[in-house]
Length: 377
Image (cartoon, rainbow, N blue to C red; front, side, top):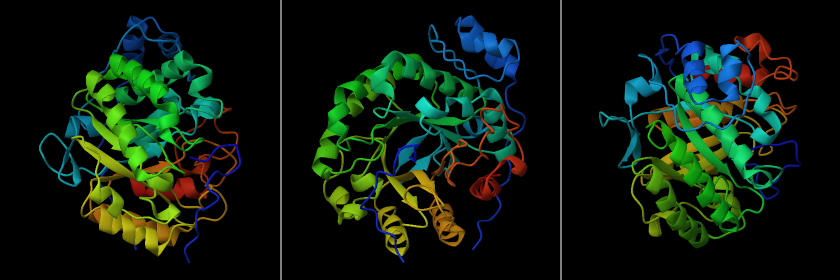
């Protein structure tokens, strides 16, 4: 997660093909009027804005969950509720599923990039299956206004749901790196989110973004405390557990996936996260992902084509090697990030979000945005 703040991964080490085209599975998305009607019924300002045709990021609190049915041809309509089967993410038919999508930037900075128009482009023009909603805990995020940031996450969940996408609800704890610092906040957040959305069947819960400076045993104990909170509101939802050393499976702190294999989280229907930045994380990280995915269910909830700070030059060759491996092994992936931040890892050209678009097509995208859109659609 790259923010407007200085890079927070000082120990990351820079290590010294083509994906086959995927059919565009979607027909048109649910119209804005359907989404507006659902939100108006809940009495939200988001619904009023949608009814007026405004492409604005309203943040009103819904009175209760108002999930819209996914239109035929969307990812959710095709796969239904997901579950973990062995080392794979599978659809209701038991067949492996590979989701591909984008992560928002921190919503405390870039909520203006997540609008009806931008999500229409992501779903229809890009062909994304999944949106990761990144709610930072510190850095001006959730802890400053728990109710407001829960409302904001809820609004974006509704918008993505209306477009037939899956949603990764990202508890974006980062600094401090020990997730146990935020355990009670996490329980409150996931209690509130599942109370509103736990019956929708399209949510996936990422309970700790990038643990760092903490051993695997501390991460595991945190997960075993928080997962029951998620299960209380969504008994069947897939839960994603962050791994040691900025979700590098421990590599960035001198460990590897074996510590997880030897001492896994005691819970069902879970996956472990892996993050990489192709210009910094080369062959040793790619090999770890390959090895780990043979023994653990892995979901790449964040990656970039740049360095570990999400900036500077793109390494598309190494990025393609990762994408080829993930396609081969049905590993779902999410790219960082869906904003117009000045860094090269933000997909939109600067100024796009404040201008309210336009959103579709390659002309509004930076080099990395053009590249990832081409591989998603």
